[in-house]
Length: 305
Image 1: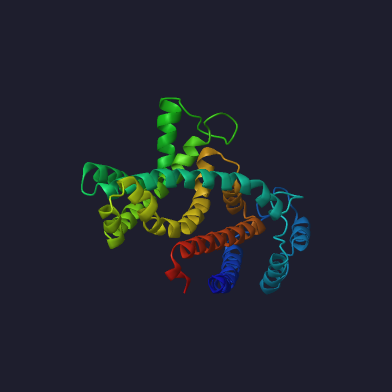
Image 2: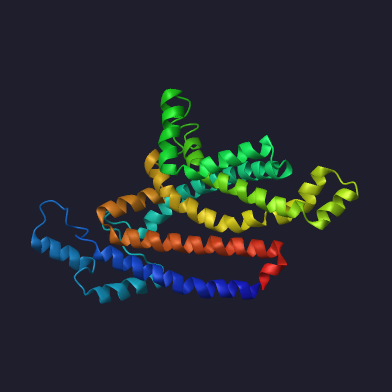
């Protein structure tokens, strides 16, 4: 297990360095600068601003200065929020984004695992076809389309649920959670069905049934551990996708999370906010992938080598 952790950390370091380098180059290669849209700014003031934020230095010098700050945990000041650091803005938006991702993954696991087990226990029947067909639809419809549809139906036509905000009124977290979690519920359903079908055809399952164990005990005690291995391996990339997908959902529903800060930074050319958010999200993605690998290895010792 320790070797697995060390290997993953050895891979993570060059990946993070690549993310920092590519993001830095792409941001600085975009036309314009963070202060180009400032009104009534004289060339002298603009030069002072560039000097203050180290933008008057050669690109190589800026890169290594920024890299030094990142190693020390300093993502620099925000260009668009005077007096506030990128770290401070991340600490403000992250809890909301993480809460949205957590609700979405719990919804995805609850619906997806139930539908997958149901389809595996009754293959090639309506109890299999209906959930799997619905799952395929959920995979094909992106959140940028599903969100407005849910808002139109449940928020405007029926007026059952609020269409914006987060924690401001009862029920305002439901539509964002459904929008973000639906596609992942579909993936979980298909992965659970495939994993359970494979396990249910194993000899030890036939032995358990031959001993007279109830079907519930066979599924819960013997089949689930192996059948859910694909879902557990999927949780790391799923959490990463949920955090990245929150950008769109937070913008649609006006949620003041980290994704919304990132979108605003992109429009406002807030270099340090874009860089800091990208690095932080990359770190989270790598961490969640590591956790899912460790859990999968704990359930399946063959994966530890």
